Amino acid sequence: MTKVIRLKNQIKNYEWGSQDLLPGFMGFENKKRLPYAELWMGTNKGAPSEACDKNIPLREICGDLPFLFKLLAVEKPLSIQAHPDKKQAEYGFRREEEAMLDLNAPIRNYRDSNHKPEILCALTPFILMAGFKKPEEIIESFDNLTLSIPQLREILSPLYQALKANLFQVFTRILYNLSGLELECITNFIGETRTEGETISSLQWELMKKFAVSNPREAAILSPLFLNLFTLQPGQAVFIPAGIMHCYISGFGVELMTNSDNVLRGGLTPKYIDIPELMSILKFEPYKPEIYTPDSLSDNRYYYRAPCSEFSLIRMRGGDAEFLERGHTVCIVTEGCLHIDEMTFKRGESFFIPKDTPGIFFSGDYTLFAAAAGTA
Image (tube, rainbow, N blue to C red; front, side, top):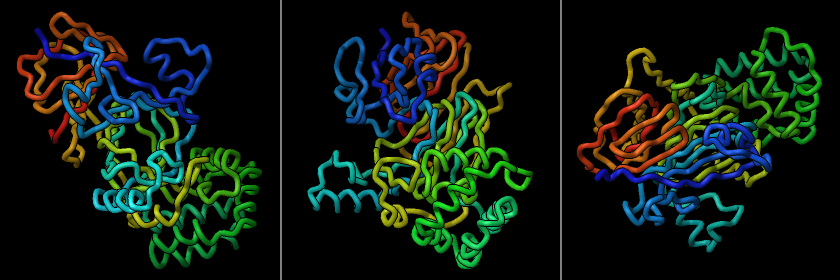
């Protein structure tokens, strides 16, 4: 008798979610046209998975898993954000506990004492921003903007002086020193400019105009100029370590992170924004995430070797294969049909394999992603 445990998972409805991506993938009708954003797989208290055949929380079988595995369906941009490292999270959590701040308070920054590195793998083309560009690239971006909108040169010129110092200075200038009137001018000029020209990419323009409408008079409108902006193709992934500013723009994918819900936000959201706390955990240095790209022709088992000791992400594809992972593992089928002994799993269905379970064999025409405890 196999020890594979079928899972029942919870879905989160957030304003930035998609009405169609998750329902279409999972095979249910969205009659109320709700924005389905995330499906959580794991033992996190925010939405713990259950063992279907036992009707008990997965936590009662395996304890707390060191990771949280998700499906992510993004229709509108998430907040610009970053996550703390382990030491910062422990200190921030202890400080807010000592202040007796309710764990569910909207102004709470640290809901646990864990760090939150994460890896995102695209199932559809996925647009995101991540990491500061090099200073010379930021200068070029702002130069190009002022070529298209000369009226902004006087407002933005102090940024050039700040960039000669360091990224901390330029980001301080953007977040703290732009006045309400200057932000209004930036919003209006970007929103009203019709001639895009060739100085700035069409995607940068599209996002800045979108931000100017959805988040007017906010410094984050300029984020496509100072953050790396790129599109992952299906199967490609990026790892986001602690202290790296990022923003998921649109797309559908799997996301794997440590078991944490610590988020420091910097803009593009109605949720609580704490700029001083965000500044305290950011790494003010250029960072361009490595893109992990499997060989689509030959990699039937591909390890996304992210530098994180708590988890590893694996993609497996059709044919007979032995399950090799030794740690607790959660799997979700993303294409086709998978057979394990007498059990069958279709797209959108997930299961748990306890650690050190021997003799598990997969068969069928399938693609699945596995989140395994520990480093591959």
